[in-house]
Image (cartoon, rainbow, N blue to C red; front, side):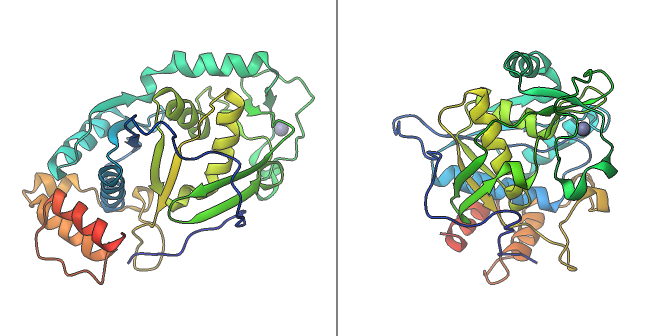
Amino acid sequence: MYEKKCIKKRSIFVHETKFHTTITNNHLRMKTRFAPSPTGYLHRGHVWSALCTAAVAKAKNASMHLRLEDHDTLRCTPHFADEIRRDLEWLGFAWSSESVQSERAEIYQHHFNELLQRNFLFGCSCTRSQIRNGIYAGNCRNLHLPFEKNTVRFRLPEQTLIRWHDERCGDFEEDVATSCGDFVLRDRNGMWTYQFAVVVDDWEENIDLIVRGEDLLSSTARQLLLASTLGRKKMPTFLHHGLLLEVDGNKLSKRDGAAGICAERKAGVSPKKLLAEVCREAMPNADIPQEISWSEAINLYQLYFP
Ligand SMILES: [Zn+2]
């Protein structure tokens, strides 16, 4: 089942954009990324996401970067990373560069130190139950708590109203101060958070086209605010695609036991058969044969979502 509606959590539409979300240097080739977390095996939701990313990349003639987002070193394993690479090759997904977050500690530390020097960081000892509805009220902002054994939060700048455009979902406006408050960049175990690592990576790796699931729409304003504070001038173009959902309407997730596609690969199933099944689920009105190749699936996407 494919959900076409956009999630508009905490955001409202406007007709003006603050950030320039398209590159002006037309002679430069755009660069996008597919960024799975090796906390488990790839499932069909990932296949759909990889396909959307590759199709948009092809339409915009963008190069493809594979990033393994293993910032959560307690849950990620090299075994899952290897299986993800094999699954992607098996499907026909091609990438021209690759990075692994766990090998980039110095880069994150560099940007963390910059923020520290500019007084954008503070230690926080609040527990989950002290933070209402996920909005941080700033309890520890001026307490000068140590970073050791505490979370480290981003002290929001004065201007926190973010306006941005999504190529599929339209225009958004969000005031990060009221939608989430100072957010966490490093957890109490000393691990970088998704929000911090992804902003640093997208900038450092010159990613200027971000294609990802619409479950991440609600992270975008935070990421733009952080990127702009870090010093990124040109913001990337965003396209949040619809998600492959379970029959009950919930997102397919490995935590909920969505089956890994590596089992099918190892059992000798044809990747063309699996791609056809994923496409049938995501594009129920399209006429799809029993087996389709990766490039045929990309063409189909472009016909279905012109
Ligand atoms: Zn706190």
